[in-house]
Length: 446
Image (cartoon, rainbow, N blue to C red):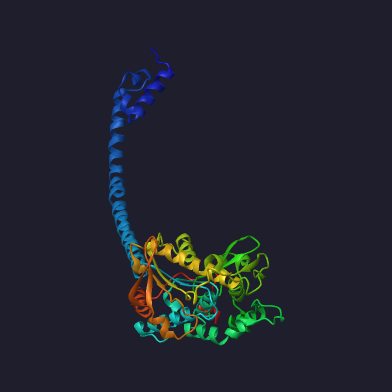
């Protein structure tokens, strides 16, 4: 009786499906006899082939199972050790600089009495506590923000000298504001019937161009990219009716958002009623603005700096919230006199009210945000000081904002608070942020 071919194929496939060779399953069966093959001879042939295959496969099995396993285990162990060391270095780096340090300088006023005194004392304390006579503020902060006269100070202490170091010290910046004050705020020649006080923009522009340039590079004007640390400067754009913030991060991305430093400082200082709106454009001419004083919306730029750091994961990857921040906010003095509630307010009085209101609102908001750890947010302010000496500012007692409204007068002075803050600042060590993507390494720029 002959079996059909389909039946044989089905039986063969069934044997292979169970993991057996066809001749092992069917070599002595009726299929072999029906095909005319000697069952015994087939069986002997199969046994010889099986023994031969066992002899040939045995050493192969030992080599494939033992040697590769040892190599894999050793490789995994070495890889684990390498990644463990890298992880320890990464964690030790962020433990040393676990908090991102923010310095914010308020706008308002023309003399910078309060902010100037605070900055000089801050830098002196950094040098004293580090025993480094060449230490500067930018060495111990990760980002600096400023508005109005505060923007001029912030830009000066972060301007790069071409070799990765700040171009000016805090004392240099304060001295420039004091010595050039009449040029920065030079009154216009007004007619007999003109009562409103206005300032000439030409004097300020000439002074800013002079200070924001490198003499070694044929007096090249510095831009927002030419800063040794991230810098934020806000203004208000009349064209878009919205705030506009100059930042080194945006300047690094595109020349359309890179502006000359003197233009950014001029824009944020264009106080309505005192200066005309400032029309300017980016270095490539593709972005233009008609700016007025940034203090109208961000006189206290601390909130803008906090928001920028939290949402800028490229430059600040370790920041997830305010618990990762250490903020020093420096005010610029409160109003020297109260506005007569029964009389009319001048334009300058209205501007002062707006600027002070914005600053106090931001201070209250940040006080609430840092209410669980108030030592991470420090506010330096002096009220009623339009002119005076540095000692008066530093010896004034701290007026601290309370959560959900209200203030309290502390026994601690501004000087004491700055000294305590510097202790925490120095303990974290010098900042080691990655360099700006647009900057040339110092050894290549020489």
